[in-house]
Amino acid sequence: MNCGAMNVAPTTSYASRSPFVSRSAASRNSKFPLLLPQAICTPQRICCFTNLSKYNSSLGSSKQQLNKWMLPLGSVVTSKSQNISTAPLTGDERIGVLLLNLGGPETLEDVQPFLFNLFADPDIIRLPRLFRFLQKPLAQFISVVRAPKSKEGYASIGGGSPLRQITDAQAEELKKSLWEKQVPAKVYVGMRYWHPFTEEAIEQIKRDGITKLVVLPLYPQFSISTSGSSLRLLESIFREDEYLVNMQHTVIPSWYQREGYIKAMTNLIEKELNTFDCPEKVVIFFSAHGVPLAYVEEAGDPYKAEMEECVDLIMEELEKRKITNSYTLAYQSRVGPVEWLKPYTDETIMELGRKGVKNLLAVPISFVSEHIETLEEIDVEYKELALKSGIEKWGRVPALGCEPTFISDLADAVIESLPYVGAMAVSNLEARQSLVPLGSVEELLATYDSKRRELPPPVTVWEWGWTRSAETWNGRAAMLAVLVLLVLEVTTGEGFLRQWGILPLFH
Ligand SMILES: C=CC1=C(C)c2cc3[nH]c(cc4nc(cc5[nH]c(cc1n2)c(C)c5CCC(=O)O)C(CCC(=O)O)=C4C)c(C)c3C=C
Ligand SMILES: [Fe+2]
Image 1 (cartoon, rainbow, N blue to C red):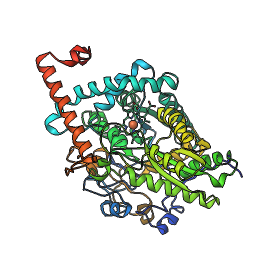
Image 2: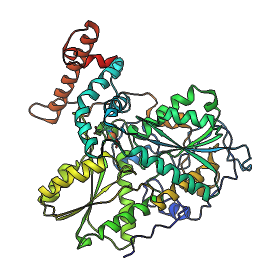
Image 3: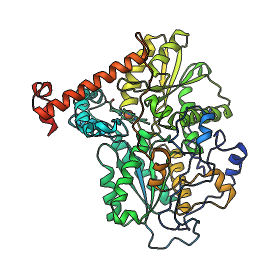
Image 4: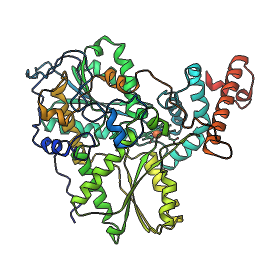
């Protein structure tokens, strides 16, 4: 079996399994010409190249339900000029690509302030309107309490997150690939919670006089908590800056359907399967980072649907290669007292062990770099659990990193997005069926969260007994108690935080 061939340079979207794109549309995609950026577009328009759409209705998570709230293909949320410009790219145009990522602590001292930044983000913890003023004190409190456990994790992977190094390398490779494809672009890295912060990247973009910017979150699937949060931040930065308000930009909100990404993932899985004695007996275990259930069921986060579709596409590609192993998808890394997307990774591993599964191949699916949750949680914790549960051989597919098929495909995604800056209703029917342009950062955010509603509780009805509902309400009562204590502490200057020496950190 040839597992090492990585030199394919795909140019088409992989939309065949999408519930939103018909199979015939997908086959037409392959004829859709790769539009090179000899076109510039009318100002301030944006196109988004996936099926991301309306998030603000109350939804279930199934694909059928999702269909109801997806924008019709080819429709677009936009308000200004509307046609694709075919004017040649002038010498004055400077193309930039902004890679958005989470960021991670580089040293153990960084861990607590990194966690503070994360928990201070209202897209990670959104408090009821009345309590919004407590966001930062609460973030401080949670980050201080969580830091020791997190530090242990980061210490065990070498004393810090490898995320910055890997993302920088990806940026460098993407730039090389773009230049090889005759697109002289600069590539920037903007992290949400640690250096180099998105604000720093934007300052550099301004200094470099970029005129056309492609915003590319490095998350294959969209979530309110990841790409959504970064776009929210960009929106606020753009709004306050005259230069940025006038700069054309494009967002690619998710790209898990792309052929190059799917093939690159499939190559890695195929290669790893071949390290087992009986590859066909291995259960392929997709493990995605979880999100609280309410994000999907109440706030309309498309994350779960995109994840499931992504797994389908990979399995379909494996099937084309005559690989028909059993597989499962589960969610890892839950934090806090609320219910998260299920099934949980740990429970599923134990269940598979009970069912007599002996060979398991873990596939991290929600992130394209190695990070604490692959290097520690999967490689150490879940492996240990699997072996205890009766699994005899455990394997793990590496994260994509700078894998050439993947990087080349990201470059293609950027190139394909360029001519559509400024486009609204794409007149070319074929383009309309493969691309779903949505609008600027602001417009994109407005599609799912215009009212900035608080994220709803996962359980609304009280049930008696030791139930999920009771646990949730207990959790909430505890949170409320902590909030009250915090308020008292901050207003009176006396209390348990001061006694524990935590309060000085508030300043
Ligand atoms: C698609 C990927 C991710 C989603 C979705 C996501 C949601 C999410 N995460 C937290 C809380 C934490 N995440 C932490 C680290 C972390 N998260 C992701 C990715 C997603 N998070 C990555 C890649 C990393 C690791 C970065 C690194 O340093 O290597 C952490 C810190 C680590 C720890 O203490 O466990 C927390 C906390 C929430 C609450 C959430 C959704 C609401
Ligand atoms: Fe996370």
